Amino acid sequence: MSSTKYAVISLPLGAFDSSNKDDAVSSLKSTVSSDSGTVLPFNIPDFKIGTLDALVQQADDLAKLEQNCEAVVAKVADSLRSVLDSDPDRLAQYKMVNDKPTDQYITNFSWNKIRYRADKSLGELIDTLGKELVTVDNDVKTKFNQYNSVKTNLAALQRRQTGNLATKSLTPIVDPAILVQDSEYLETHLIVVPANNKKDFVKSYETLAPMVVPRSCVEVAKDEEFVLFAVATFKKTSAEFLQKCREQKWTPRQYKHVQGGREEEQRELDKVTNEERKVCGEALRIGRTGWSESVMVWIHVLTLRVFVEAVLRYGLPLDYATALIKTTPKLSSKVKTALDGRFSHLGGNAFGRDKQGRVTKDDAAMSSEMAAAGLGTGEGHEYTAYVYYEVELP
Image (cartoon, rainbow, N blue to C red; front, top):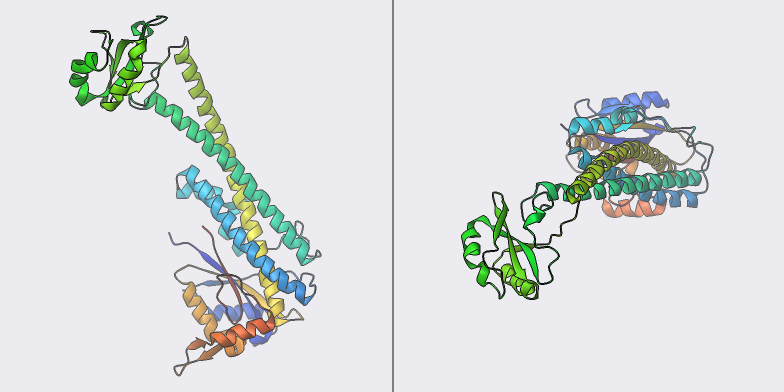
């Protein structure tokens, strides 16, 4: 399934034959062929404009904030993928914005005038959006960290139930009757031996160290890989016996019989299993909300960024047309080529043409013009002759 890339473009109405914004968007549809992208209206409110210095600073602030939006949306997507095992159908159910598919929200975007009142200053709006993004990021991070912790704990408990004899719990396996208990001089050791070393162990365990109780070896359990033996030794030579076992790659297992231990282990497993199920549900709910909120913040930040850049480039009055272009990562270069072919003249000396009429860029002139105009395109953003920003959701 091909992913979607969105681009928001803003151009002065003077670049079109008509001064009507709807006509300008229709004209863009004839520039971008339908086989490379779909052009849709993208309405931006007339925000309160401060000083030129403030606008230049806000352009920088918005560039950084949009990078943060992209990072948070990517983190939310990764978190959801990890819980849903990258199942595309289930992911689609959680990647909703205001209970609508994300694509539907973006292609029908309308500025939320109740939540982000257009009569507030640009600085206030940027601050509000930034704080909301931090809240979303913290909420998602906290809940998914909790989920990962519980999941790790559950996996460890399950391994103790289902692993091999070298790792699993011995509580359900060892009969306390085979253990020497409450003796002042003797104690029982449980040793895990690879199945193919079973004969070697039985033949040699009595001579591994002094004061091993003869014929005390008992086979307790076995699986496909290992055999578990119980061996009695005198306490004062226990350390030497265990060390000799380790040297032979035979694994001593620590075990102490506790009355009711088997039931207690099952209760702990049941408790953590239920907790994992509960926290998983909470994480998915937070993830769904986090996706919705972070995508909404991103598109609102993008809207402000386009507005500020358009004012810096085209000045006042606010006579410019804005549109959303829906395309794919593969076809986006075709969209750019078509737009550059028609609107490169807006870049002044930054764009020229070779003998075949193809658009060329004079990077030195472009840099000087941008510096003179006080324009910044943001880190990693290629300069265009018109306002143009892309969004690709993970």
